[in-house]
Image (tube, one colour):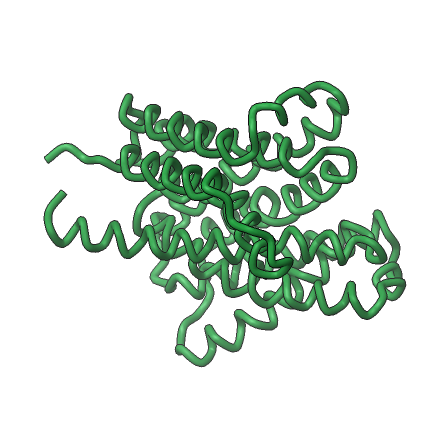
Length: 301
């Protein structure tokens, strides 16, 4: 790495940590929201709120959404694989799967991503160094959760497969997002992010109408609405801008490590909100995961 590349890389690592922190905070909010709001309705409402957040930002910055059909084709694919399907599958699966095992199941994303990126993203090829980095990062997840969480594998197989399928959706999403900037459009990152959120909102609203009915969201109580508004503004809306920027700057393999960092920040959020102690185990896990990110992104001169 050159000096400039190293500086850009570590700046993006900081953004990745911020993204993981924001996304890590969403799990507790989702637990609150789904008590009284059906899962698919939650997806529809949070994406609609995120769109309301993103569109004015795009307008204020003088940006625009893509106008070409190839971009909108990828946009709807991202709406499926990056929003509607994974949001629903992971929420549905966590009804029967412990959070520790869910974190391990979500950790299939980085390996899936580097394999897909090898075939579908130019300049993001599979290497032994990346595989080592993924293995080190996965070791950090195991160090955090504890190997005993693996004992639950196979218990509620269908729900576990749902979570793993959601993780694979995120892998497809990361690869497609990298390709979105290469389809001949001059739109900005915020324009592309807003387009994808619009596609996701259309799809999730239609799915919610079919699965839950048009008035299901009205059953939600005030706590569920506060949690849903938070999820829509920060983890779904503003975090999408960070996600797009990182994928376009560093590639799909790089962003995939956010799934290793999410459970770590789940622990740190618990420490902050519930005044629980941050253990040495958590610090060691974070160190391993950051080490894995660094190893996986070593580039030969």
